[in-house]
Amino acid sequence: MKEEIGYPYILLPEDMFHHTAGGYGGEGTLCGAIGSCAAIINLVAYDNNKTHSKLVADLINWYSQQTFPTKMFDSIATYKDQVQVAPGSPLCHVSASTWMQAAEVSYKDKPRKDRCAKVTAATAYRTIEILNQHLEGKYAFIGPVHTEETEECLSCHGKKAAYTEKGLNDCLDCHDDHTK
Ligand code: HEC
Ligand code: HEC
Image 1 (cartoon, protein in one colour):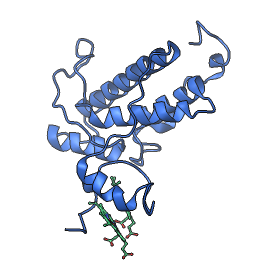
Image 2 (cartoon, rainbow, N blue to C red):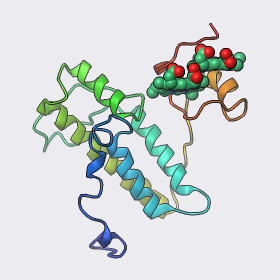
Image 3 (cartoon, protein in one colour):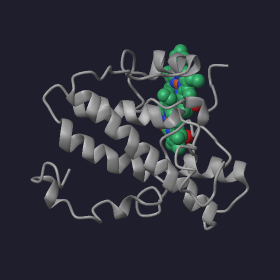
């Protein structure tokens, strides 16, 4: 984009998103790949219809459902054919930890670094697909997707009811069902 479009993209420093590694400052919050790509989506697609926010939401939902890491980059990866786990969450903590348990590696191990590099590359790839489709007017919004159980929780806690909860991840990933 710097080469083809120039301004404003030439103003973006190369290390602009370095802080997002390890879920922002190593705190395991939002996966840094999502955060960085979301910033780019905002730059490219911002408008008064909140198109940028809807695209970001779709990217987050896409991420949660992927069996990561993709094998798409195996030809250039050091560690090929790695164990795949769908994170079910956009959180670095959940995404990295569930994968590490499944793959039996620790955070400092090189296969873990390879895995997160592939997750980042796949997320950037998907972001470019989304933005290209959007700019061609062909992007079909997906919107929020929840499990039936979460739908049930949201029938009381969600936007159309008491609205005492923010976020659309699967509630039962973290909470018990107090209605049972
Ligand atoms: C029939 C409506 C209803 C449904 C369905 C429901 N909740 Fe609640 N929930 C409430 C109400 C009302 C409170 C507040 C209770 C209070 O003030 O003590 C609450 C409280 C909570 C709390 C606060 C701590 C606690 O246990 O009291 C959590 C967490 C919670 N709900 C999560 C969930 C999750 C997760 C689901 C789905 C599996 C769910 N709720 C489904 C009505 C509901
Ligand atoms: C990634 C984990 C995670 C997910 C997913 C999640 N929550 Fe929570 N939620 C928490 C944590 C952590 C707290 C704060 C500690 C606590 O009270 O359990 C919390 C707090 C709450 C509270 C306030 C509880 C209180 O005692 O004051 C409610 C209500 C709640 N969540 C409902 C939901 C609902 C409904 C969903 C699904 C749409 C959901 N949460 C999804 C982790 C999560």
